[in-house]
Image 1: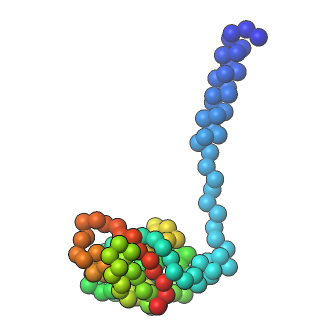
Image 2: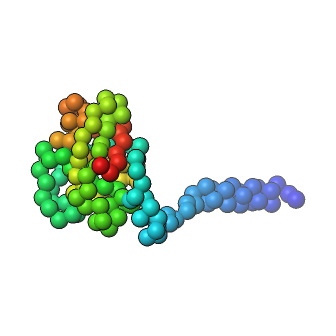
Image 3: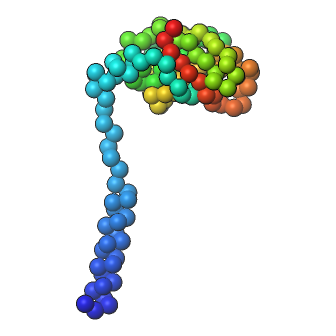
Length: 140
C-alpha cells in the first residue's frame, strides 16, 4: 500500500468516526402507561424555576402572587393532574408550601416544575436572582 492509499483510508476512517460521533438517537415517545406511571409517582427530587403566569393549560387565569405550578408533560398527563395540590419543599431552606397545578411546562424535564413568582419567592425567601432552586414535590 502506498502513502496515497494509506492517506485515503485514514481520511475515510476519520470521516466515518466524525459521522458516528455526530449521530444522535431520536427521542422515544412515552407510552400512555408510562405517562400514567410517572403521573402517579410520589416524591420527586428536582428543581424549580419560575415563569410568567397567565392563562394556564388547565383553562384558568392565574396571578403572579398565586401559589401555582406548571407540571412537566409526563406529570401533566394530558390535563389529568390539573387542579391537584402538591407539597413543594425547598431542600436548601426546608421551606414547605402548598401549590396547585394549573399549567403545563412543555420544556421542563420530568423532575422539574415551573413555579409562579409568588411561590418561588416564598420558597427562596425572596431570592429571585438565583433563578432555580432545589426542591422536592409530591401530590398533597
